[in-house]
Structures are given as C-alpha cells and as structure tokens.
Length: 210
Length: 210
Length: 210
Image 1 (cartoon, rainbow over the protein chains, first blue to last red):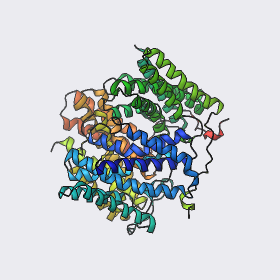
Image 2: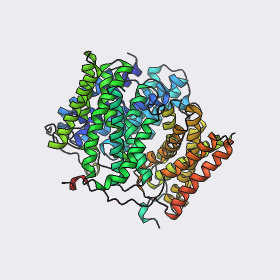
Image 3: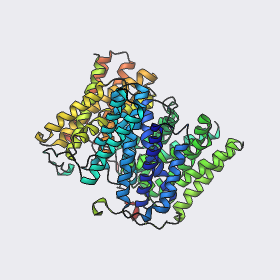
Image 4: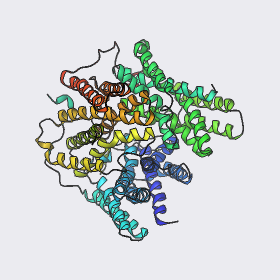
C-alpha cells in the first residue's frame, strides 16, 4: 500500500472517531454514532470527488464505510473513559486535517494537473468533514474560533503540491505536508496560535442595527 | 406505474409537505413554502444521485417539482387547521422516511449492484431531506433526538435489499421494507422507542473545559 | 466578453464580498476571510454545476478563485470603515442574487433546454451561496426573514428565461432579468416589502407540545 493511500485510511478513521466523539457528547445511540462517524469520516472526500467529477471513493470500495463502522463501535464502548472528549476530538481532528490536506491535494493534482486546484481541493477535503460534523451535531463550529484552522490545511496542501511539482518522491512531499499541517494546527491547539487580530469590531445583532 | 416509482412520488409529496409545515411554523410567505417544500422533497434524492454519479432525477422529469409546488400551495392554505403541525410533520416525515429508504436502496442497487452501497444510499436518501429541512428552517434536528430515526431507514433499506438479493418480486420486498421502516419509526414516535442509553455523560460546553 | 459572463464575474465578486463581510462581523482572521469569501462566491454555481452534471466552473478556470481572494483581502483591510457592515452585506447580496438568477438560468437553459429547469437552477444558484454563508458564519438565515428574498431570484430567472425563449437577444433578457430581480429585492430591503402574511400562528417549541 502506498503512503498516500495509508494517509487516506488514517484520515477517514480519525475523522470518524471525531464524529463518534461528537455523538457521545450529545448522548446519541449506537446508530447515531455510526451516522455521525460516517458523515465526518467520508464527508470531506465525498465533496472532493463531486467537485472533481470523479466517482465517489467509497461507492466502489467498502473498506471506508467498514472503517467508520468499526471506529464508531469502539468509541461507543470507550468514550466515557476519556477525561475530556472534546480535547481528544480536537486533537484527532488535527491529525485528520493534516492527512486529508495531503490526500485531497494529491487527488486534485492527479486528476486536474493544476497546482491551484490541488491546493483548494486539499483545503476543502481537510475541512469539510469537520464543518459538516459541527453543523449536524450542533457543536460550535471550528471555523468561527480564533485559533488557526483552515490555514493549517492550506499549509499542508501547499507544501505537498510544491514538493510534488518539484519532482520529490510522493512519500517525501506527503510526509512534509502532513507534518507541517499537523504542526501548525497542533501549535494552535496547544499554544492558542492565532493571527494577530485586525482592528475590527464584532458585528451587531441584525435587530440592533438602526 | 411500478410500485417503486409510486413510492418515489409518494415520498417526494410527503417530504414536501413536511417542508411546507416547517415553513408554516416559521410563518414564511408562499415562496418560502415552495422553497422549503422543494428542498425537503427532492433533497434526499438529489444527494443520492450525486453520490451515484447519475443525472439528478428531477432535472429530466418536471413532475417532481410540480408535486412539490402543488403540495406547498395546499399546505399554505390548510396548515392552520391542523392542531399540532409539528406532530403532523413528524408523522409525514415517518412515511417519507419509509418510502425513501426503499426507493434509495432500489436505485443504489440497480446502479452499483452492491448490497452494501444499496443500504447506505437507502439510509442517506431517507434521512438527508429531513436533515436539510431542519438545518434550513432552524428546527431542532431529528438527528439529535433520543428516539430512533436513522435506524428505521437502515432497517427499511436492509430488508428491501435482502429481499431483492434473495430474488423476491420487487413489490414484495419493497412493501416489506416500507412497512418495517414505518413500523420502527412509528413506534419510536408513538411509544418513545429508543435504544437503551449507554452510560455516558453529556458533553460540557467548550468554554467550561479547563 | 459577453454580457452573461460579465454578470457571472460580477456575481462571484459581490457574493465573495458578502462572505468576507460576514467574516469581519465574526472577527475571523485573513484565512477565515478567504474561506468564507470563496464558499459564498462560488458555492451557488458549484451547486448548479453538480445538479446539471457538468464540470464545476471554477475547476477549469482559476479566475474565479482569484477574484474571491482579491475581494477577501480588500474587504479585510477596509471593512472597519463601513458604518454598517450588515447593511452593506445585504445590499451586495441583492446585487449577487440578481446577477446569479440570470446566470444560473442561462446555464440551466443552455444545458438542458428546459425552461422549467432553467428557472429552478436560476433560483438555486442565486440563493444557495447566501444560505451557505449564513449557515457557516452563524448569521441569521436570510431565508427565515419576512422580507422577500427567494421571490426576487425567481422573478429574475423567470424573466430572463421568458425573454430568451421568446428569442430576444441575451443582453436584453439578461439585463431585464437582472433589473427586475434587483428591483424586487431592493424594494424588500428599502421598504420592507413582504407578502401579506397568511393567517397562521408561529410554531410552538417541540417540548411545549403535549
């Protein structure tokens, strides 16, 4: 199995785990775990394949859905042992983000040949599953927090793409992209990294605007 | 008209009615009724067709959009007579869920030939329209309630698929799947059926986590 | 450049600006501006292309993503000078709505040849980007407000389609559709135009229903 495919399976598994953890926080039943784990695990890649106009990856390969199901069951029986499920969710999400930023970029580049599209599909694949999870589970959206999130996906996708265009072996540019994306997002989680805030004021509620 | 196609039209009509009822609860205008009725009525099937990479069903056949429009107008002029629109919404949603679990599975099986994909497309088709309706109308999501919901779609899709793979006539496996899904969801609505809760604690709000 | 293509670029730019303004209201960082600007600017057209089963427009033409990026940066450095970002957001949204109602209808008509599909793709293209923006940014949904919104898109798409079917030059029917949609939505914003409310009562919260 090539390293990019491994990143793919790993990304699906950890995103599925974040979906199942969100289900646990909402005290859903086992089917709720399966559903949120699947949507989160395969949501980003599904969106990428629709955009690229290629067959959706999990329709022809049942491994992915199986991975989501196994992960959901394992989390169902172990989530209560974790002290803070939300922190675990955020860290697993960081791993998935890093894996999918490379994987999404690799597929975008392979199919369109355009580095610009590659960076965008990397970013979308990495972030879409988490956005969907937060919307469906009613969690606060990772998008709206001050800490760096989308940027990490952008960095990973850009580094992989640059390395691949420069002719590096895929395992090198893939690992470099993964490591960079995880470092950026991990730093944001651990140290609260955020861009310096631009002088701006928060929006008023629409009903308070004269 | 074959029985599966009938289920399809019926499913679109009742899901459109749930969308229009949600519009009535939010006191939208007639166009809001048309919009939410259409999104809910054809949303699940649209998503199924995108996933299966086949032409979207309502683009080539205007009957579906017409059904949604007629249903929206009828609900617009009658919804105030209903004592509890939310209860009616939930029961119609149960009928639509049962119809689409079979219809979605039948289309998935016909196109991919894979029983695993068939069960998943059945589940997605049956639940996606309602999830979209709740998101757009700001209703509490059916996904996050304790009563059985996704499970009913899963049961209907699995029974239809098993019957069809076993060589039963489509009308038999279709009716069996529909009846089973409706019985499961109806029982959940009437008697509060839910899976025994797993020992878990609710998630803390992110800002309360140290 | 033909007039319909110009409407397309203009629509992408103003929708991107509304996404960036929403990002400013939520005090996101520059990447948050880029992300919301892109999703809002190209979301409606992406959905249209998926429905029509044609290649997604921005995958083969990097101009669109570039426009979104430039607009996001400009708004990032100027949004604080605007007195009411929310009002500006609503007015730019009205321009984008009008442009996309024509553009979406034109593409739907060109590809399917069906006036009914044309009106629907016009409506969807015009409204989907804004709905996505409000969902992702946690803004109150334009859909749920009493003022006319979807109707304006419907009017623009219908007038363009009627004109085109009647054989008028595209620039005439396009401008007529744009002007009509903008007039309807602008009137709704300026004068609070809304359909006369139907005698209805607001929905109770689900937990208050016996």
